[in-house]
Length: 90
Image (cartoon, rainbow, N blue to C red; front, side):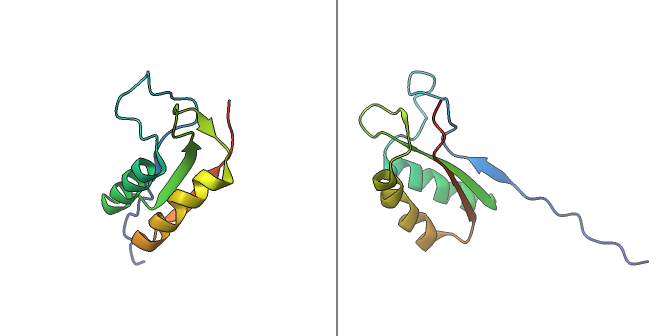
């Protein structure tokens, strides 16, 4: 029986859903920061990018289609990772 190679799927949650800027100064907040972090994660091997948008003014999670519209095209143009968006806010 032939052996199958071990495969790993890496998911990166770029911002998390409950984190705030006061918890970490490394948290990406703006659409540009989130897109860049997602692109870097894909470049490092992440196959799935789980994304929450953020209000660029205060860093709170945001379900805004406008904010997602600013970051998703950049990610799509730069990676072939599966993009899993969520609008959940706590």
